[in-house]
Amino acid sequence: GIQVEQSPPDLILQEGANSTLRCNFSDSVNNLQWFHQNPWGQLINLFYIPSGTKQNGRLSATTVATERYSLLYISSSQTTDSGVYFCAGSGGYNKLIFGAGTRLAVHP
Amino acid sequence: GAGVSQTPSNKVTEKGKYVELRCDPISGHTALYWYRQSLGQGPEFLIYFQGTGAADDSGLPNDRFFAVRPEGSVSTLKIQRTERGDSAVYLCASSPIGGGANVLTFGAGSRLTVL
Image (cartoon, rainbow over all chains, first blue to last red):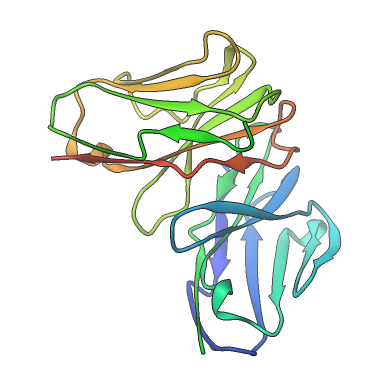
């Protein structure tokens, strides 16, 4: 099955800093999504991005499908950005396979 | 409803007991997914429903786990003869139509602790 590798596993930032999170896939995926899990455990979809680039406020994501990776950019980080960021993709159109996540802590 | 609702939010049980976890998806969402998340890990796929039928149950770890969705809306995940290794957060998600090509909306999860 598809393997999803995320890096870095842990990240500590000072408020206002920028960061890039990476997700590599072992095989082509039909759909790719980024999620944020807040400290209370709620998973929120950030982007559905099988290819190309999307932006939503301070967050943007780029997927290079031919090279099987995706990047999530966080600019001007805030303490509310803390949590775990997951990427997920599927070989078919049903089950999303998640990576182990990047744990982000933003300090004031 | 406005979001995906999961009950109970917390469940503590003893080894060997039977447990049911309930998921109420967003109204009109035909696809429903169950995931399990262990501490420090990403969510792990268990089962996917399209309507009333289980379209993919390849993630269920063994025959102690079973899930139903009899009317194509609410789903129940059933765990028999619970083991300590079943302790995890069980997440439910729904999407408007079938397939991972749709954005999933997750519930807050049911935290199961098996003593």
